[in-house]
Image 1: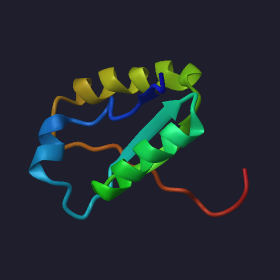
Image 2: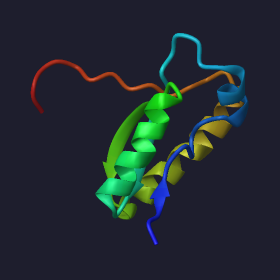
Image 3: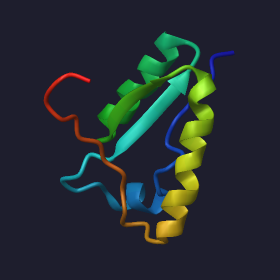
Image 4: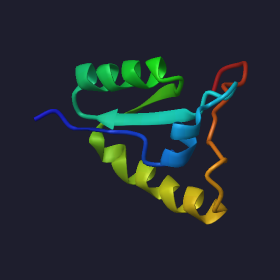
Length: 88
């Protein structure tokens, strides 16, 4: 089976309402790179900004974002990512 984890930290209500000008980040992880690419493509088509988080060993990190989003308590919040110029 091909398992991909994504959208853990996205409020369903926010997605239903529409994203407006914001492209919320969606982190995608899974052991099958082709399956990750399919899910990332779907996320992009839906207006999200997909980020490949690697294999399923990263799933715990994605799950850790969920309590933060819930603690904010407002479905109008969305996590975004900005890549700054320069090298790491």
